[in-house]
Length: 348
Image: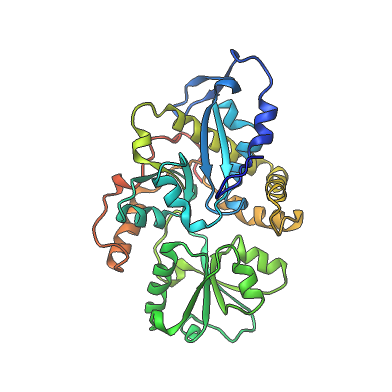
């Protein structure tokens, strides 16, 4: 296993298994255009650093399956799957050139472009929002307005506090009416031990963890709070990497599609992939029962096509501008492209 200064690789075991065979051998996969493509065996694999949006979990299980089953190697790629020490640093890892590809929520792509980062989304993993305001049952919080004077914990992604401010305003509150605490990966613990009265988390991740802990979470999706629909998780790269020869990006997205399809077809294997990845990194909450519950909640949400919705992206960007989260109108073509995904897949 490779240890980095800011992330940990999950892919070494796959590389060792895939390293057998002759250097001159070829493997074939179906490209995003439907053509059969030949790719080199492992000695000639193209190295790629790929950063998850957070810990290995159910929303990125398609990546984990592609990694653990050797689909990236089949596509001629040597992918080191990394997880960030701080989830809010992923845009920087990508924009500064250290990582070729990563995962981000779609709103973060909009904010990154507003800040001048040359990032572009090239495919979707989770095509609808999963984020929600969550509080514990029996807490005497019945609506957003009841959060006045309370503490709300967030992961710390830049767009989260901006979204929270818009949600509060709709309920007649201001940012000064609440305390916002950034806890990175500690959302469930913050709510469970009383350090936060509510959290901004995912219904199918933190929501499931709280349910499994018997904490009876009350979950209010962001779309019920005035936030437009958006893609919860998209694959992102730097725009200049799309120039020249983008065939490796096609191959990467094809491998991700195989991993996602494998997870949907075999939920038990998807559960095992999450447990294995988290145990390898000595992360908490790696029990098979919890992983299975998250997989059951998440698999119906995964994109079967990886295609993004241009109209939805335009609505999101415009809403963010109207809310003052961005200052200028950003053309959708500069934010997202479906050029590198297979349009012939089964719709979600």
